[in-house]
Image (tube, rainbow, N blue to C red; front, side, top):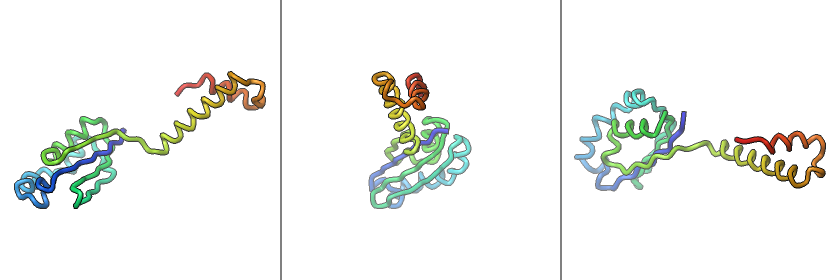
Length: 134
């Protein structure tokens, strides 16, 4: 299931800690977080806030971006926050892919340009990388 990073920001004037009207609107839907997560097939991996900065950060697993959007609508965060949702991947996965592309290009380039300098044991691997696509 894809992972999404959700960054939310609101003004001090719209903060439910200081604004009674927002607090009243916020109180009821926020108590339904568990039900809304089940409804939209959302798994909350982490949720943090920086109180003085008026920002909220979530990392969630979800089937789609619209599911994430609907979750935050249902729990009331959308009416008082500017919300940015981005699909994200673990950095380790990106590093592995980058390194595999590097090796693919290195071997394919060497094999194409200088096949005679590649050790016979590596020629098979080089030929494999030459025809390999991710």
